[in-house]
Length: 313
Image 1 (tube, one colour):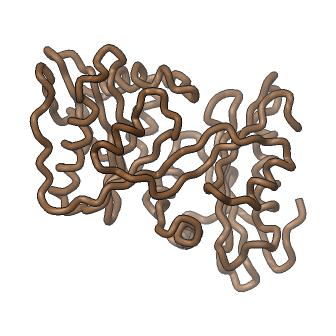
Image 2 (cartoon, rainbow, N blue to C red):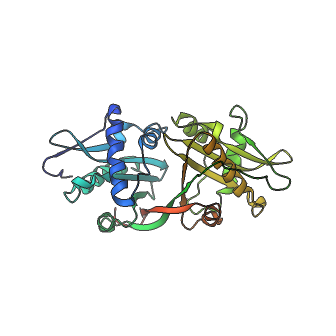
Image 3 (spheres, rainbow, N blue to C red):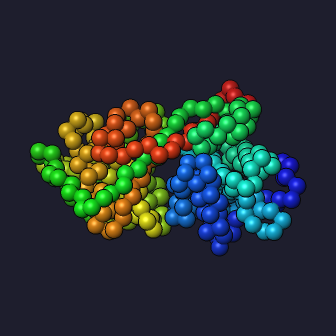
């Protein structure tokens, strides 16, 4: 695990969050034209259950002490480690990305020790040929593409009426979280990356997140039965739609569209003029077409690469 001359690799400190976020923003601005990852995103990532900053993340630091790159790895399922990283554009081409990936793979091997059929995934920005070549050489292959989609809100947003027979309302966090979880589990069951998440873990992941704000969440009901749900969060200058799901028995009735439009109206009331979300480009439910119909557009994409049993390592 050779570290490039003039650099050191170590664990990030909690007080370096803003400095790491600045690296992510610079990388996004260079590659995508605008930052998608910010300090709020990083704060959430560092707060995940089971994630230990001193053990599961690394920064590359130059001779002057400036952070030049960042990477992290997490055990997402008992047999799966997922990771990602970024290098500041001013420090690329020096082997920092390869050194960070060495640390990631070493940590992944520890987390997956004894697993009969381990899987390892790494996310990279769309069009990053250097990163793709590095992953290909290590036995990974591209398996999924995700889009960042955006809408700019101009003027007052009128959500319109809910579909016939459907009531949209705010989530009551003291009693509705199990209903939201059940709807999303049903909605995402057809997704090729789906794996069941226990209610307690799902709640823990959301509640521990610093950006957790259930006042932005919405529930769609038919005669009191939850049939659709939307979770969201607010950043300093924009909103994020995290999850949107409609039960398979209720698709095609405009419920997803209504939930989105009500979410946009809620963001607009808070003075936010930009809303983003992340979606699988090959989502089997037609979500990408739905997002386009409500005025969202693709602003960037990223790829998920995987080494499964039978690959290198």
